[in-house]
Amino acid sequence: MRRRVSYFLIGLVMFIAAAISAGLYSASREALSQLNYNEETDTRIRSVIDRMMAQETYSLTHEDWGPSMQALADIGPQAVPRLIETVDRARETYISRILAAGLPPSDFSIRVEPLIVQTRGVMVLGRIGDKRALPILLDIQAHHDLCPLRCEVDNAIKSINGIRVRAKGFLKAHHRTRSNFSMQWSAASESRVVPLALHAAPTDAGR
Image (cartoon, rainbow, N blue to C red):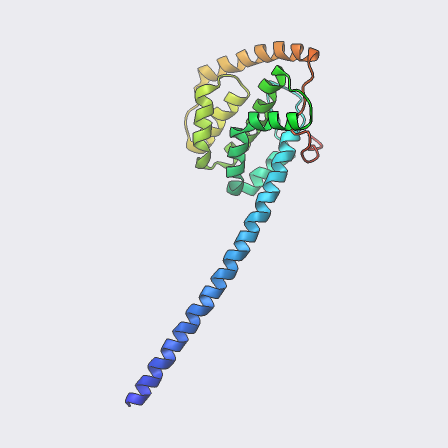
């Protein structure tokens, strides 16, 4: 009787050990697969962000929703860290790419081009609705009064966290932006404005 119990216990222990080993092996394979997936996704996100940065601009008073922006929104929360980085470092990225191309950036382009990219990134962050974007959005809200960037930041915060947009300030900023950008756009004819992503992926078509 004791032998039977011993054999049973030994068999049970071996079965449990085999099950644990199989589980660990399966988990390790899944983790490796997830790592490869993340690397591939990150490469794709970078490429789509480059296309978003290279997207042509037809107006300085509002920003259109382009195919690359929709692609990033479709990727969803996994794109949020790179989008936050893009928004946060838009000015540095623009200057470094311009200098790498051997073209001196104008004061106007340094002021305007990063704001365009930030506006697009903010719009995508608002569409995704991930609360990790709130710190950068609130920081921009505290330091920028001009639309379209400020307007899209307000909209994104409202979308993510249900914060009510201050309508009075929104309208004042919007009217002020139209006036300021109209004067700046006229002055831009005297200086060359270089697109942000000179060596990025091809520009979105069909906007």
